[in-house]
Length: 382
Ligand SMILES: [Mg+2]
Image (tube, rainbow, N blue to C red; front, side, top):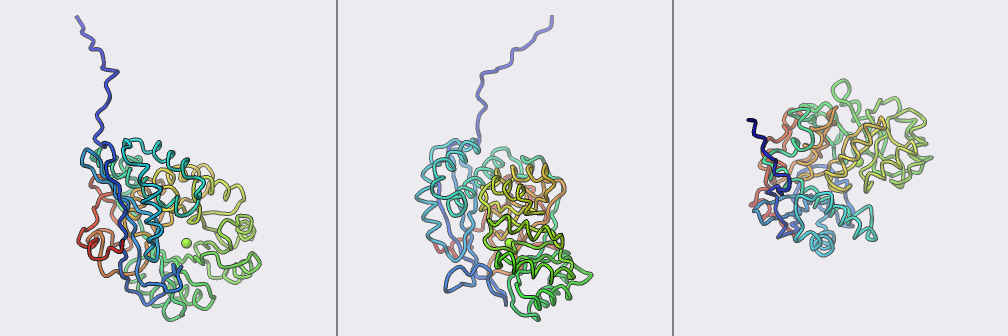
């Protein structure tokens, strides 16, 4: 006689993720070594330090998840906003419920901005929840996103701003010598851009990111002047960043592939860009644009819209790790952005330093690495 065992259909699966019992922010500012200017000189007294604003979540099953919010110039106001407005809303939540928690935060706080600091904090919580989910599963994050398409990702050297032909050319030569095949400039004047392209000629593709300085008329003039340099893409030429009609006007000239998106807050920003015909390359930032959850939606939208998905990543903490996992899960694997500068200390003991322009995808559970507590203690500013 065949015995058919009745499945236990009502059994609640045990969650290893647990409930969130502790949530905190940790702001670290690492001194950087570069003979270049920080592009993020948002204050009147720019610092040669680089923020990593961690969100650390702890659950009653003993798991710890790390997230990161976009931050610059020792932004204690942003840390305070996250601590007082966002983190109290996650205490007691079931850490498995990433989508529900993200929706609760977004809906509850939408009057405080759909783009900017509030969304940076929500992004950090989302990244930390994915770290917990992957640790609970005992898998690297990439395995939860569909599995790795590649074991390593190609990195592009995203140079700081040198404002001198010799300076930027020397940085290009150094990056080429280290094995980078793709280099992005943050110069805004023609002589420096041309000098960098000459230094890279035949050895690396060059992208140009100008961070929204120009009117549409000015951008059209530069677009024409730069055309002979064969830039790999032209990023954020027009002010303001949400001037999608202006971007579409530049793109219509077909001289360059237009990249933008680091200043969008959600999937819907990218829908608006694509509807306007503004971009060829979408650049959401995992620590600004809603975390891992939102980047996966944007990646799917890009795939269906014949737009290239190449996340923005000027991050060195959990946001960088999350971006490695997201990129490694996409087909084709996007280039990984990493700022080209050295720090006095390394949050991950060198594990995120590219070798010959490539970074291995972590194979340990979660994001893959825990930040070095000694480095946090030494450089913590809030
Ligand atoms: Mg940019």
